[in-house]
Length: 96
Image (cartoon, rainbow, N blue to C red; front, side):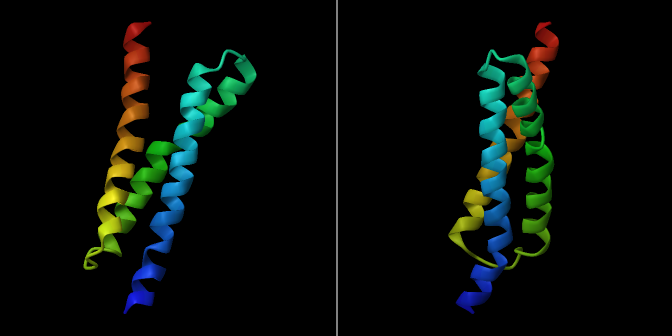
């Protein structure tokens, strides 16, 4: 049964790692002054909400019955990487 848990949690782990990388590129892109590089990094970081939504739905559908400590952390990573870029973009939109 333990190998089933590891195999089921492999996809959310991969999505969370990709999501954190996209989130970091979003923050670096916002703070960078070089325009072409910052635009590419910011655009890559805009994938965060989409990836976190996919990961959330996967966790709700496939991993619903599994009681594992990592599932709580996956939800926290999904919430942060979904809400922070959207809040920053809304703030920047209303600020200009």
